[in-house]
Amino acid sequence: MDQQVSPEVKQNRMTEFMKLLPLTLQLAGLSVADPARPFTPDQIEGRAMSVRMAYKAARTLIKDIAENGV
Picture 1 (cartoon, one colour):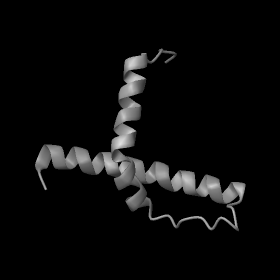
Picture 2 (spheres, helix red, strand yellow):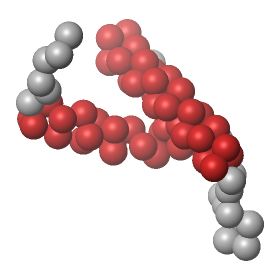
Picture 3 (cartoon, rainbow, N blue to C red):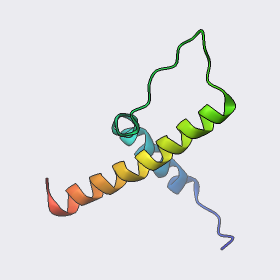
Picture 4 (cartoon, helix red, strand yellow):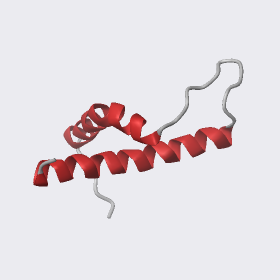
């Protein structure tokens, strides 16, 4: 499983992520940070996990819509 990913595949993945980012952030439902109170490292990790899960949900939703319609 030590396969190299081509630069084209990496670029396609990043493009897909960026296109889904607005939907992903809406699904994650995260609040905006207060500049006077930055997040702790644990809070940042928790938020990152929320974004990862929301991204997976966004990808699944888009694939489902593409295959089955709305």
